[in-house]
Length: 132
Image 1 (tube, rainbow, N blue to C red):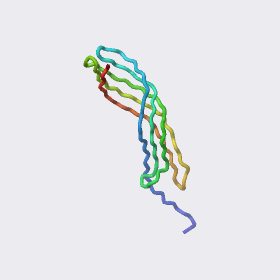
Image 2: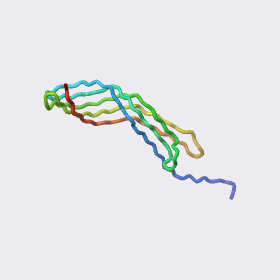
Image 3: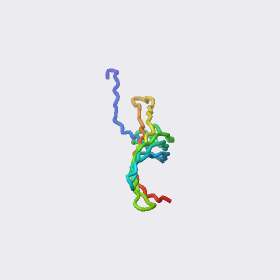
Image 4: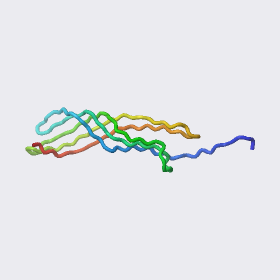
């Protein structure tokens, strides 16, 4: 050998996950009544708890882990229809944005990591309401 060293670089599989534990909203709504149907838009504040993890797939230890409650905003719209005197049925869609953040680990040998966690949630839900 002539004194040179060579390095073998093997590909590595990584996993980045975000889990929404819970979410709550405080919203107002404004709409147009097309008797007996209400078409509305809604918006306000949102709060949610997220768990973020990043690490090599084939190791038991993650490189990064975070569990935090985040404040954001939400907007959406829906339709509510009165089908009996005190009963309505509705369907709505909501978009919630809790922001994003990037984590970057220090280089260790030949590897380093950088991960961006975007906390956006889209929900579609229906409901049956009794007005009393």
